[in-house]
Image (tube, rainbow, N blue to C red; front, side, top):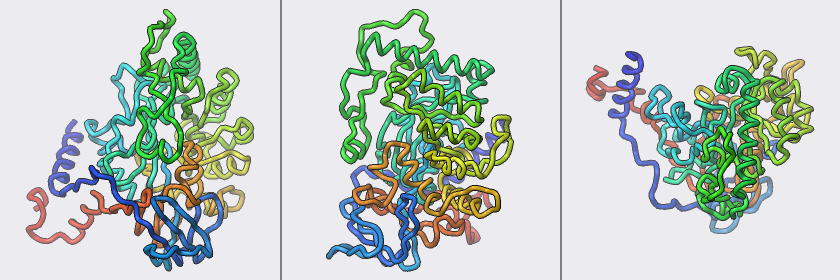
Length: 473
């Protein structure tokens, strides 16, 4: 308690000593028309970088990118000599916007251990565009993210959202984009102490949801754009279904139901295949159990998160057509479920035909570290006996592949024509640890790269006598 009090006091002092500008704007920002020339351009689709390339952006969209691209008359030209240009990074499965200061519970909305609901929890209601980690991640080149809750009192953590990291007041692109469930060791603990219990809880919940839908027909009560976030309907053309939790129906449920009505209704899109089910598992045996769910619930759209031992069952994952959002560099047997962890995991799954992106950016694995992890996967491939990724594959693993797994490949994730102009200009190879962004655009809008960390750095880099708050004398 004393340590926590000290942390809170320190945070309060820092907050008081550094002014925080209003990052969220009440009015929409204007997209720029521009062209970046003479740069090394990486499309983000797995292809190799293009020397002396050009990227043209108009109306918030990429018009063209590559070699020999003509610059339209009247478009502002940015000389990218010596620079690299990539699509914005896509952080899949993260707590961005739900956590401000990890050590302060009052600033965290990533888990709800005392809640009466689990599957029904919808993170889009709590995402804060002014949260400090969003500004820090944006300055690191992250432009989109899939925000997921953490399981606290049940195996179901709740429904995640897809957001952009632009400096405006409405970050949510798509609410209720996926349901997140914990299996493996953590799921076993939450379900009652064993994987046996977790599997029973999972199947019972899915069957309750299916039965509730049969009784009420909730999944057939129309679609539309109710609850749609910024950008998604207009740019992707996808209708966002009505929130099934709010459906009005007089039909009842089975007397032996264990779920609340709200939780059961929230799982209806999962069992009907309208909402993907993201399943966190690590060991090979648990991954096999997840793949078997398809035989019992054929409509499930599964995504595996973590998969430290995925390489051991890579061919089975590939045959099932289930994508993976893997932790990049997990290689230590820190738990029994990761005894088979190896840095070759991602490369081996990719070689077996698994669609693999990098994901799981929580706690110390900050989203802005994604380029470093991707670069390490390139380096792993150069070690004798190891399996890594090519440069193009590594960049795609943090841009277009996670966007594809999120169902947003036609909206963002690469520099292909027609996609959102999420563009990052780097001062060097983005997969090299010493490189960093010098300019960032979201939907063609230039982003302010100043954040809480940069202001603290600038204030205390060369402190002057008398300029510090009293506690620092």
